[in-house]
Image (cartoon, helix red, strand yellow):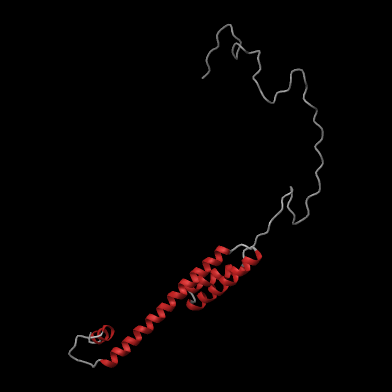
Amino acid sequence: MSWPTPQGEPPGGPYYDEQPYSPYALPAGSEPPPYGPPPPYGPPPPYGQAGYGYQVQSTTTNSMAIASLVCSLCGAFVVPIIGSVLGIIFGHIAKKQIKLSGEQGDGMATAGLIVGYIFAGLYVLGCLGYIGIVVLAIGAASTSSYDSGSDGYSFVLPVLTSLFGG
């Protein structure tokens, strides 16, 4: 909505003759410079080089670090012990190569080592636990006699007595 102007004032207010201040305005009495043709374009930079004075730094990730993490994860879910062991081996190789070459992938190699060691340890503990259960079951079966009148849990007492001395 526009307000009506008073009768004696020109549109724009009492200071109509004054121009607003602009930092880009030309000094009074001067004309703008004439525009000429634009400068010619230079040749494009050669293929593979960065323009405008920037250098491209090619940082690569160590392939052994990638292999370490992939093998460790495969060792966790697909190929149990083999993948974990390969992940550990590749992780140590990657750490050494990264220290010498300065490549990226140190965190990936560390993650491959951690996952590989954790799952290899879990598989070893699982195998030892399985062997222990089999040995206990065989020992319990050889020491107990079959009792047709028992409720089916007659192997528990010999195993507990052999474990805790009784």
